[in-house]
Length: 514
Image (cartoon, rainbow, N blue to C red; front, side):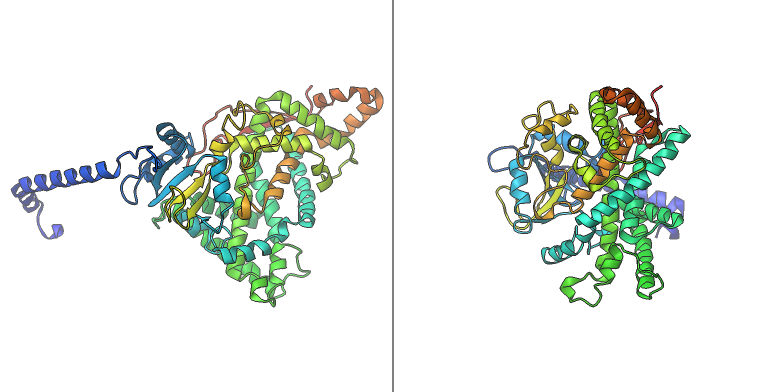
C-alpha cells in the first residue's frame, strides 16, 4: 500500500492521524506493561511454591539465557544469578518451557531413579532437531532400551582395550611432533581433533584426512546449533547446524551404501560394520539406517566435545597445582618404567592408575563439562507440574561445600573417601547413565599419562636409573616432559553449552627441564 502513495501523501496521513496513533501506541504500551507486570511477578518462596520468574509466554527469560551464553562468563551465569536471587531451587521459562533447577542429591536421586517412570529426557527443540529424533538421547523409552543395548558394542571391554592402544599411538606421535616443534598449541583444539579422529577410526574406520576434517567441521557446526533459537534463518547457528546435519547424513548414507555393495574388502572391523551385519536380524535386534546415522552423529559429537573440554581443564588445573602434578607424574613414571621402550598403554595400565583416576574425577567435578541434566515430568510430582522441565544441577551439587569442603580447591585426594550417593554425577546416573563413561575416563587417563611422561627421553631415563640406582627415583620428575600455560585468561568461550576457555588453554611442551 505504501508503495502506491507518495512520500508526501504518507506524511500527510501520519500527521492527520497522529493523535490516534499516539493513543494507540500508549494503549499498547500500557497493556503490555500490565501483562508483563502480571507475568513477570516474582513468585514468593512461600510453602507450596518454587520461587522464580516465568516472564512472558514463550519468551520468558530466554533473552537473558542467550545473553549469558553470549558472554565470557558462560551460560551457567544465568543459573548462578537466579540462585542468588531466589535460593537453590528456582524456576524459569526458557524457549517456551518452564524449567526447574534441582540443586540437591535428594532431588537428583528422585529424578535419576525415576527415569522413564516419572521423568523422561527433556531437551530443547534445537537439540532434538540437530542431533536427530532417532538418537538415543531423544527416542521414547521402548526404543531407548533397544538402541542403547545395540550401541553397547563400542563400549565393551574388548573394544575399549583396542581403542586405548590405538588412541595412545595416535596421541604419542602427535605430542612428539609438537614437542619437537617447540611451538605453543591450544590444548582444546588439539584434544578435539585427537578425540574426533580416534572416534571416527573406531566407529567407521575413517582415516582419510580430508574426509576427517570435513566430518569434524560439520560435527562442530551441529554441536554449535544444539542450544539455539530453532528458526531457519541463513547465517544463524541453528541454520548452520541443520545444514551440517544434512551433509553428515549424506556422507553416512554413502558409506552405508558402499559397504552394502561389497566395494570395501576386506570388511572393516568397526561399529558401523557390526550394525550392518544385523541386516537380516529381527527388528528388535537391529538398527534401522536412520537410527544408525543419528546415533553415529550422537556418539561422535558427545564423545568429542565432553572429553576434549575435560582434557583442557585438566591441564589448567594441573598447571595451577604443581604438587598434584608432581604426584601424578610420579605414578605415571612408575607405570612407564615397567613397560618396554615404545610400548603402548594398555587397559591393564589404566586400571593401575589409581591417583590419575582421582585427578580425572576432581577435574570433572570442578569443570562441570555437563552443567545439568534435563528431564521432563510425565506427571505432577511434589511441586513440579506435568510437562515442566527439571534440570539436575550437577554444577551446584559438585560445588556444595557440605559435600565437598573447600569446593573450589583442586584436591584429588578428597576422593580417597567414599562419596555420598548422587554427589558425583559427571556421567549422570540411573538407566540413562552415559554409555561412554569408561571411554571418557580412559581417554583422559591416557592423555594425562602421555602428557606427564615423555617417550623421547625414555632411553635417557633408563640409563640414568641403571647408573644411579633406584634410590634416585624421586628425581625422575625433573627429567620428563613439562609444560607451561601461555595464556592465563580465564574467560570462557562464547555461545557454547559447556564451559571451555576461550583461549583454548595454549601450552608449550618442554622435553627436559634443563
